[in-house]
Image (cartoon, rainbow, N blue to C red; front, side):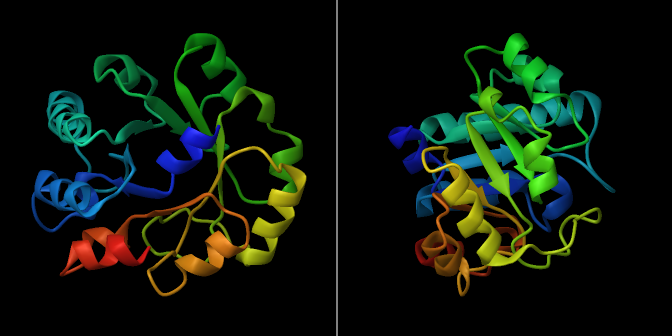
Length: 206
């Protein structure tokens, strides 16, 4: 668990739809700057499908392996095997985490939660870490829920003192320390990196 906590500390999420330049260039800069985990989230308007989605995933996975960065797939079960990912992250409306655990006993499984009701109704024992949020308001995900704030992170940490937890949603360098201080083991970001003119400065500040 301690190793996973460290590996989730600076967690970058991205798909081609989030980028205004080649995703590989952005990920390579972020990798050199010190991100510790990456989630390939090719989803939403303008995203790739089929063979192109796989080809981009292969290029991104290669970068992650070269820099010893955990490589996660968002939701797409088939891609986990095709890209030999380290793990998969799912939301409340995706495949059941308990079923994922049966299918992938040796993969890292992450689950998003945004309120206590979701926590109560989720198979927490089947997952390796939680993605909690959105902590702050975010425009990156069109289906994002209402912000929960850092106080809920404190409550979640008190409820699960040993389970790795990553803060998600609207996190930027100027507020990331509040999320960590509230009990998160790591912070995940999309636009903070994809839209940054100086990625190395952003990653260093997270």
